[in-house]
Image (cartoon, rainbow, N blue to C red; front, side):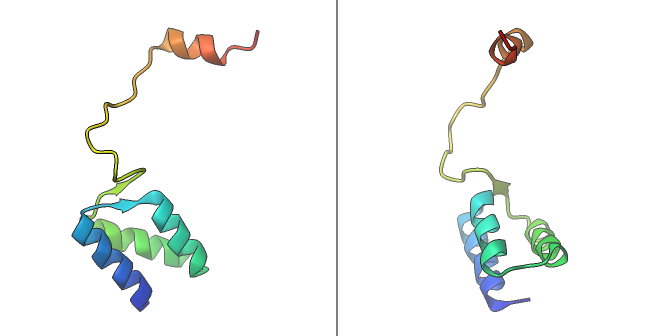
Length: 77
């Protein structure tokens, strides 16, 4: 595996998190194929590194909604 990917994975292990946006940037920067990107995802899973939308937002309440609220916001009027 490419040394830049290994460094990325080590940094994720140290932080105990990899942000999806960082992963997307790495895949684009290295012009990885779908197969290569899948291998990176597999390496993340094998190392048990959490993959999250935003690692820096610890303690934020989970967003909730009710079907009525959603329907009211998404219904064309």
